[in-house]
Image 1 (cartoon, rainbow, N blue to C red):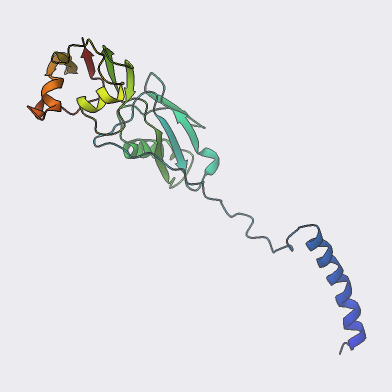
Image 2: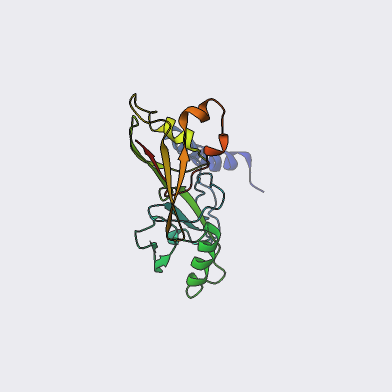
Length: 210
């Protein structure tokens, strides 16, 4: 049986070490976890996706492997529609939904990883654009990240200039390789007349203000 004086002498060095650790701002050492534990990849936030969204050129994606974080990567869709990923190299992305791309990456990774768990998160949508040209305050291209009408995009583009032909605005759209034009009378729409002219824009539409 250990006597009191011996127990005291054994406790003093341990207390001294603990005091030094606390003074240095260090937490007491803890037992290490299993050496083969695999850390999960960090969760990345994405942007809200519009209805019918498919990945396009210039979109910024996060491809996340939940058990193989070293394989995860942020990547931008190239003009040829492909993305570059560690080990897998080029993977077709444009024209796919995020879920379809995740399945494609999972299948490609199956050669190297058993049961890969892959998620594709959209960080930025740059492929969906509409264009406003002519007599507006700020002509140019605008990202179409949500539902937007002709009246809204004109406001986004700085409004109509003083001498614009507000009753003769056109929306040009390409459907199945053919050009289609829609008429838009600004004066009527703002008065609540013929609201059907205020159509919902689609990616690639061009609003022409003369």
